[in-house]
Image (cartoon, rainbow, N blue to C red):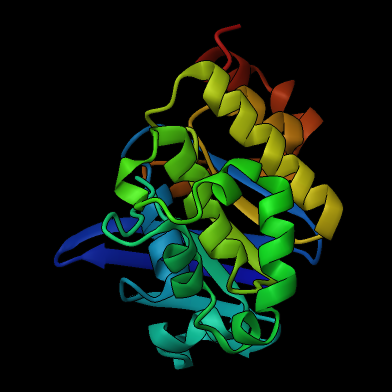
Length: 235
């Protein structure tokens, strides 16, 4: 479904990604882990078209993403849930979801998607008329994920969904993400610093450091790698 091939990205004269390659197959749950500054968010921004690619290739469902403007990529089925949630604080919960459903697929599937979203996140149904800025951090993260789902995506990209959340709240968010993946078969690409959880739930994973993929494999392979165990799992 998603193929990233030897991707290079730079901010001005400063290179950030150095030949990154990864793939996400249909229905797969893939995690990208690594320290701060490794280039994980830049990778997501390149896929979404927020930053320019200096070299390499990007394909989604066989289509050359580099030939598709950023504004069109959500209509292809790519939903990017950004780091820091970035909900529209003055809009209600329902209005935020409507903003997510602006895509062609999202408009067609709005009624059914809204029912499923409220089943996964019942608190959002209770808060439907409440301004998003008055929600708790966990509720805002649920809303950000739900807004992505409202676009009727084929690929859901989640950038640090546990950031700034209490451990119990982050655990709840992970459980809901896993339930959504299980219920829908939606492809998920997750960037996350909670490495144990990210690798546990993923079919495959990649370790990104200083803009390069240094390790890849299924979750068992990565969890048993001494470098991962020492650097990220505290073992």
